[in-house]
Length: 274
Ligand SMILES: C[S@@+](CC[C@H](N)C(=O)[O-])C[C@H]1O[C@@H](n2cnc3c(N)ncnc32)[C@H](O)[C@@H]1O
Figure 1 (cartoon, protein in one colour):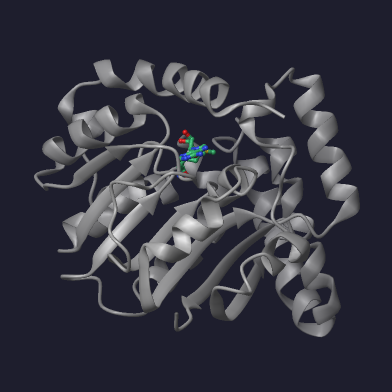
Figure 2 (tube, helix red, strand yellow; figure 1 turned 30 degrees about the vertical axis):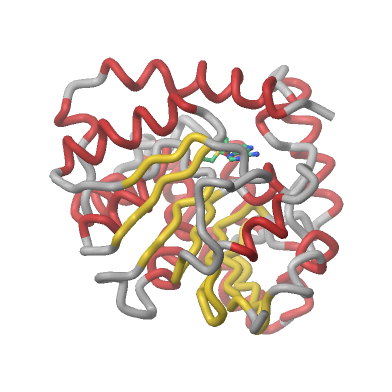
């Protein structure tokens, strides 16, 4: 198992390269987020179904004035978007580079956010019941391995606060083997997180703290999109993706049991009473 120091060093190196980007490339808001989701040359395109569902979940209740934590924020696209919608946003990441990048992007986007570089297992900077909403994109599967991280997450959320997770889903054993194989072939480091992927077992850990845990699954056959990565600017590749998505919809509606075999999920829950 990797240490927090190794994970921090890995992500610092990942994010440092973006710090030199000009302001126009760092800026974000709703329009830019939407444009990136629609643009096949952008990395967001591959996850556009998941990310659109995430946006719907986040804005299913008003964001303006809410105290929101973007947990394991990385480049913080969603936290910064919510700040541009009038939310009071805090960015949290183990990587100081992520926070530096997030603050720089906030300035370029014309919003003010708070940035905290800390280990999710030790959130001493945060008060009990501080947040109305905690959002984590591809982050909880990183932090769950650190003892105490879940207790800390629950502590800083007020009773009734919302949790919105945007995650890869690990309910499909074949897909999990393919993921591990792909990560090994690509010589990805352990820090990139293929070792823990959320599934029902991981979610059970949330139950003592959260109510109304709901999983919305996305992409069954369409998970083959991983094979098309980097090729979405080609029309044949987009046509293949759309065809797979078009088969998924009726298939999942007809056989709901298959949902657990999907590769991505938006998970929502509410912090229970203390
Ligand atoms: C896969 S990245 C996701 C980043 C971002 N949320 C996104 O979707 O682009 C995982 C993030 O979790 C952060 N992270 C990992 N372990 C953490 C910890 N113990 N405490 C806080 N953040 C952590 C990493 O630094 C990294 O930025």
